[in-house]
Image (cartoon, helix red, strand yellow):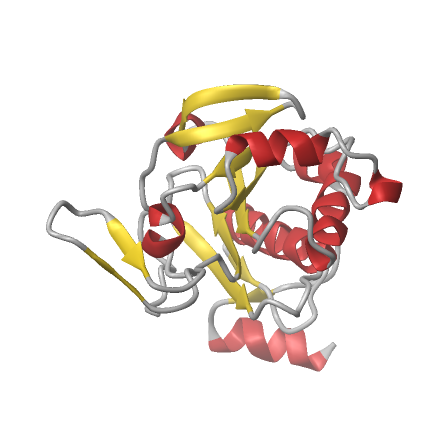
Length: 209
């Protein structure tokens, strides 16, 4: 898999479930360009074990993302009807009821492929249709996309390894701090802490404190 960082986010149009219930055709990330940052994350499957913990964690911090003008969007290779059924299932029964951000249905699996997070062995036939002899799903990929549509941060976990949503929020803060101040953010930097100027003098000043 090649890194997509500094590249324009691959375009797609697909069906998505929005606001926890409404099926929307031709959903695209393009609608947010020039308006919002986007956190676009993939998860393996609906009705599983680790996945709902991640989706609920993003929902719990959704107000913080919204304060930062960030649109959170999930995606898996399940159908929109599977997404809809899972969204109607209560949390105490393994569902994701209460999740309101869009969830994209990558049923032909090409979105996950274009973002480099599709598992397993597969190929394309002469008609450009993806074909596989085994189950193929998405790794836990995550992409932070700026308002120009450029990918600024990329993370891919194997299937058993859940992500830290707090870290995703920290990366949003780091990107926005750099854009606003031209200062780079050192290891373990958090919003409100001192950053560094991107020159030797600035580094020396930071290290002297």
